[in-house]
Length: 486
Ligand code: NG1
Image (cartoon, rainbow, N blue to C red; front, side):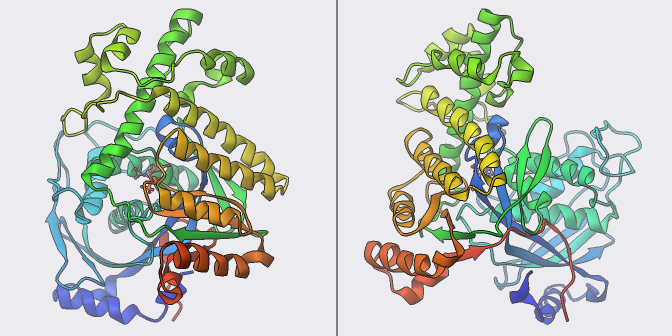
C-alpha cells in the first residue's frame, strides 16, 4: 500500500536519531493515515447529513518511538530544521489547554489531537461508548512520543492532508499509551474525538474526513452518517477508475479560506434554526438542531411531505441579522452570540450582503438526496447514472454553495466532455481537486485529454509538469499500524 516508501526505513531512523540523539529507534514502529476523496455529499457533514468518501492510497507514513516523559516531538522527513516539541500535563485539570502555534502552522494539527485526547478524560479502559467522564478514575497519559513523518497526500488540495495528520497523531498517542483502537466501536469513538480535535485549529467542520480516514477499507467507499456516527462499507472502485486532478489552485486553510468555509457552516446552522422554528410553531415539532434532523423519524413526516414543507420557508434574497433574529424571536445580540461566535470567543464577521440561507439550505437538502440516490445506483452497478449525480453535485456546489472556482468548473467540464461518467470538485473547494469517474477502458485517453486540454491548452503547462497533478486512486484501508515489507 505505501509502496513508494518501502525500503526507506533507514531515512526515518537516521532522521529520528539525528534530530534527537537520546531516542532509541529500536523501540519504534510505523503508523500510517490515508488521505480521503469524497465521492459525493459535499459541505453537508456539518449539517449532519450523510457523505460518501473513500480513504485513498495516498498516505502519511510515520515512524513513532514512545517516550516515557510527557513530551511530543515531531519532524517532517522532508523539512530540514523543521521539528516541533511541546510538553503536556499527563493528568490535566478541567479547562487545561495546550497553547497553539500561530494559525496555519502544521504543528497545530498534532497539538489538536493531543489536546483533545487529554480533554476527553477517557476512563482507564480507554475508548468505550459514552466515555466522556468527568475526572476521577481517568486515563493518565504518561507517555509521549518522537515521530518523523512523510506524506504523499497533496496539500491544500481537498484531500484531507491535515485531518490525516490529526488522526495519525491521535493514534500515535493512543499506541504509546497502550489504548486499543481496533474494533469498529473504538474506531467510531476515535473518529468523533478527532472531529472535535480539529476544531482546535479554528474550523467549524463536520466529521467526514476523520471518519473516512479511520473507517476506510480497501475496495470500499464508506457511507458516513452522523448523530449517531456510523460507517457503512459500500463495495466500490472495482468497475471504474477514480481519477483525482488538481486544479493547481491551492486552497490552504488560511484565515480568508477558513472564513469562507465557516460562513457556510454558520449559514447552515441559521437555516436549520429557522426551519426548526417553523416546524415548532406550525407543527408542534420540538427543536431540530441540524438540517440532517429533518428525517421522517424525527419529524413524523414522509420525505415527500418534508419536501413540500421546506419549499416555502426561505426567500432567495440574502437575510440580514435583524431579519434572522426577528424570525427566531430573539434579540440580534443573542442571535450573534449563539450562531456567530467562534471557538476563540471572537465574533464571526457578518457578510455585508447578508446570509444566503435559501441557497445553502437547498444545496444541503438536495445533496443529501443525491447521496441516498447514489447508494442505490452504486448497488445496482449503474455508475453512469451515479456520474450524473456527481455532475449535479458540482453544479450545486458552484451555484448554491458557491465553493467552486473557474478553474474547477473548467476542469470538471473538460472531464465530462472527454469520457468521465461524472466529475465534481471534492473536499472544501475554493480550489483543490476534482474527482472524476472513468470507465477502465477509457482511462488512458481520458488522462491524455485532461493533460492536453486542461493543463496544456487552458493552463499553458508542459505535460511533464502537469503529470504530478493527476492521480488514479484506489479505496484503501484506514489509519493504523503499518508493516514495512523488508
Ligand atoms: P477538506 O477539503 O479536507 O478541507 C472540509 C472539511 C470537511 C467537509 C468538507 C466539505 C475539515 C477538517 N474538513 O474538508 O469536514 O465539510 O470540507 O465537504 O473541516
